[in-house]
Image (cartoon, rainbow, N blue to C red; front, side):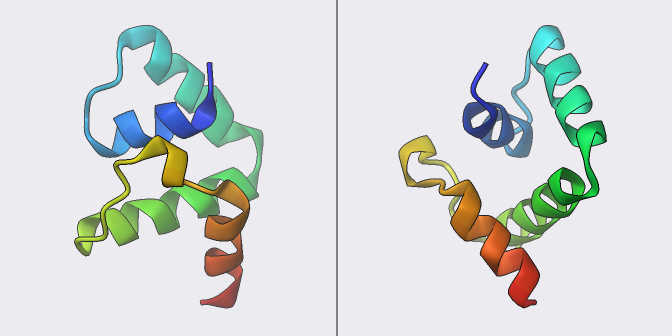
Length: 68
């Protein structure tokens, strides 16, 4: 599974049970993963559109996390 697709589906509340397990495992792998997801979730809640998987750049998103 590709984590970018999983992150988008998680933000949109549309994960299947296997995808939810994959996401939970990924989230627990590192504090960096947790920080990245929390930042993406905050951006999503604030109205930023994070719906296009092709536009999601994990490294760029992580840079945004580190700069705040």
